[in-house]
Amino acid sequence: MTESEGEAEAARAAVLTPPLSLGAGGLAGELRPANLGQRVLSLFRNVRPGSDLSHFQLPATFNLPKSQLQLYGEAVYCGGEDMLARCARGADSLQRMCAVVAWSISTTRPPIFGFAPYNPVLGETHHVSTSAGLNVLLEQVSHRPPVTALHATHARGEVELVWCQSPAPRFHGASVEAAVRGARELRLPRHAETYAVGCPGLVIRLLPSPGCEWAGDVRVSCAESGLEATLSYRRSRRSFLGLGGGDARCVRGRVFRSAAPDDTLCEVDGFWDRQVSLRDVATGEVSVLYDARQTIADLATPVVQDRKGVSASESAVVWAEVSAAILNKDWEAARQAKRRVEETARRLAKERNERGEVWTPSHFSLWQNKHGDWECWPLEDSVPPAPIVVPSPL
Image (cartoon, rainbow, N blue to C red; front, side, top):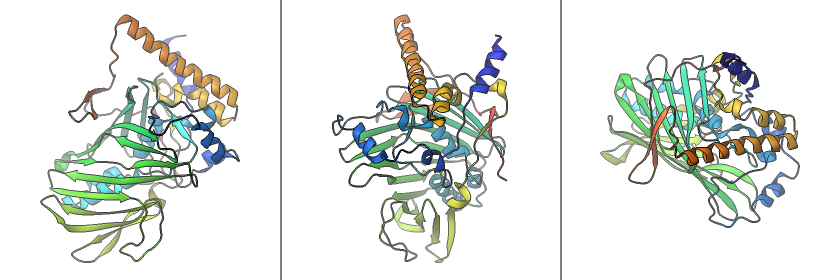
């Protein structure tokens, strides 16, 4: 088989599944067993509180049919509207900051209790483009600790996004709390602005009632404009609109100037899976900042457009056999296919060690800063169009 024939064969093996969205709960619903809560609890019977779960191996029956790289990527390239381009269209720095806040909220996707993506293998990649010209490339740049790098650019040069993520899940007895270390750096070249954007952590409750929710505080800052925003993902009793309740999908926050942190310019309030409102403090005017139904409902599944361009390291290829078996509910085939992927990764690591080779990422440089956090930077100025594309919304 020639190299080109091998690439085409790999593309035919790619398995792509629906992204997590407000209307895509069926993906896990089809796989969810009746006694899921009890089965999840049984996984942690021999795990000590405080344990690091970064490399906790889940049976295939608890896996979503997709890699963590794909979940990170979907938060950027799957959306009913181009939220990143909206950031660049703001008429002034305050409008752009609010648009960045809205984009940040849009990356919060509905978690599914009892299911987790595959842990990416070292060197795994995921490359996808949208019809709007957004090109996204991810690479697993470290395995221990797990670090994922993302680079996204607009064909029109409006936006550049660099995202370096390192999840740190820990078991706390009655829950698993997954902090996400690293930062998202969003650049708007035409406005000479760079935004540093954090993200909330994920809390998986085991007792007393099973469930998942995003929680924690998020900071967004832009040194060039002197604007900052803070968001809080947690239960809230009452909003500025008079809405009460203890909904765990509440998000509240504000926008202010770094030089006057007590002087609030705008207030943010709502629910990230429904609607989030923005109130101008000076005028009292209230507008819709973010509408989840327009942005993350019924999202389209990416498709292979260029078979020959699909890399053998592509997530949808690396895990194709596992995903196909999970979708067919052939759990023994899924278990064996997953073991083959993981054993191959271990064998390659062993061979590198025996040769004294140090693995380096193909698309990013990687380093650890003085605070111990991982940072990355793309080796190329822009991301080329991908062989996998997200179909245009109907």
